[in-house]
Each structure stands twice: as structure tokens, then as C-alpha cells.
Image (cartoon, rainbow, N blue to C red; front, top):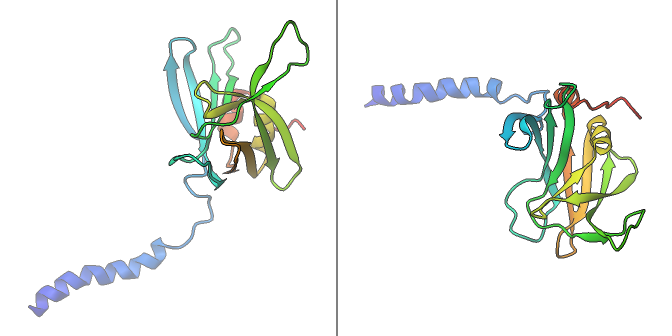
Length: 192
């Protein structure tokens, strides 16, 4: 019986000696803080590259959202110059956002456009306010290439919007190395 106990406990002892070496903190960022790259295809655009970055809620929406917020960037090489280019950037919240009807700068008839009022802060800088176009399901909002370039230059991005109940939703993204996004989407992050 004692021999069996020793044989069972011996691997546990070896594992406990090896565990501190495996549990040592690593200097690199967590695996969740990286751009995930996938190849997509649809009937309109053909083949394109999608980058996604998961964030976290600092203040969650009032709905039953179980997912994390994410930034999703689509880039396509299917154009005349055969050079990759930015197609679309989306903030995906997963819960319906508040839609405002904004009057355009130049009116031709009676026209108002649906927009999502967004505030974002790069690092600890000043808050920038923009109106982004809501997605078809109203749980996301599209941002421009210039906004993406600003975000890629930061270490952290904090984005605030309102859900369809009027409550603030605050999201934070740790911005990892964006070289693949910059090159694939032809985004100049060095432009100020």
C-alpha cells in the first residue's frame, strides 16, 4: 500500500517543483490583447482580411450582453490598384445602441441620418466626440479610417456610447502591436 501511495504522490511532487517555473509572470501582454486575423469571403467584396480585437466593459450595457466588446476592421485587396485598403471599422457592443437622427451639413430636401454619438479617449488624452454610423442590427457602429489611425497610435482606447435605454456604456481596449493592421489596411499611424 505504501508503494502505491508513493507512486501516486511522486508525480504530484514533481509537478509542484515544476509549477513555480511555469507560473512565473511573462513580460508580454496577455493573449487576449492581440489582433486576431482571419480571412473572410462574401459575394459582394470577394476575399478580404478581418482583424478583431477584444476589449472589456468598464460599464456594461443594461441588456443581457454576455460577450465582450470588440473592434473589427475589414481590409480588401480587391480593387484596381491591387493594394490592400481599409474597407470598414466597427465597434461591436452586442447590445442595442442609442440612435440619434442627425441633420447633415448640407440639406437637399428633408434628410436626417442615423448616428451613434461616441466619445473616445486615447491613453489619458482629451475626449474626442464623433458620430458613427450604426450597424443594421444597431449593436455596432462604424468608424472612419482616420479614427482607426488615431486608435492604433494609442496604448489604451476608452470608448463611451449610450445603449438604447440611455445608459452609458464604457469600453476599454488595450492596443497591441498593430503592424499587420497598418500594412494590410494601408493605415498611416505616423500621421498626426
